[in-house]
Length: 116
Length: 166
Image (cartoon, rainbow over all chains, first blue to last red; front, top):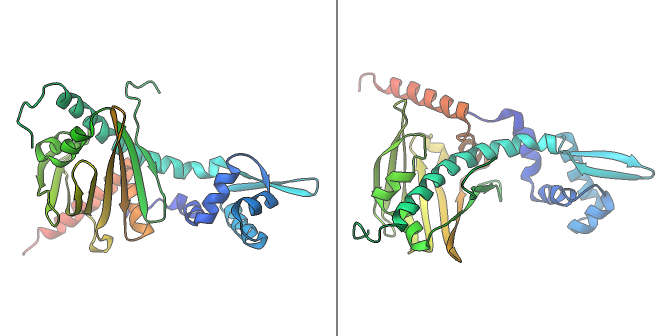
């Protein structure tokens, strides 16, 4: 079966709901771990564990600012996942565009075939 | 991108085993329902631009079955079938869905489609629940052209293997 091996790691990382929440929070901007602890209502060791997984696959970057460590989303690492889903969406877009055309046809003449 | 259509399908992955698609249609809900559940109408949109629907059978009752077949320009046949689990006319449709080209391990997906009226428009909200993340990823990868070609090649090879002595 065709599996997208190149994205498997990032997929693993974001398969966990809490890690998706972390990415959501970081999506609004760089944050120290304390903000994530507050936002998620988890203990710091758990948050740190999730952050470690996200960093391992490159989904999250970290930098030191004075005594604080700031985490941020690395969009580039997540792009393959976005692209992958986008291709699937394109298939449905084609389908639904055809459905749009059909619905336009159905809207025009009222009851040409007596309905279903 | 400049496209006349404003609507695009929003695809998200709510859980490891789900694919959710949301799309807005500029049409009354009753028409969207008809287009979704009437064989002659399904035949006009279900293949998109990837081929022609050669068969669409619908027995719209709980426990009733459906089967859609399309043929690509290259001559590959793709078929899906399923069984209706819940039907609330114009509002809600729950059905199983089996891709006939997938192995038996893939199992049936459960597809819940909800239509909601929003002013002059209709919102289609469809969630496909599958048995595992592997199956979900496999389904997602069918959107990829080369992945598609690979599965067609695999299918062709499998079909060739079936043409031996019965």
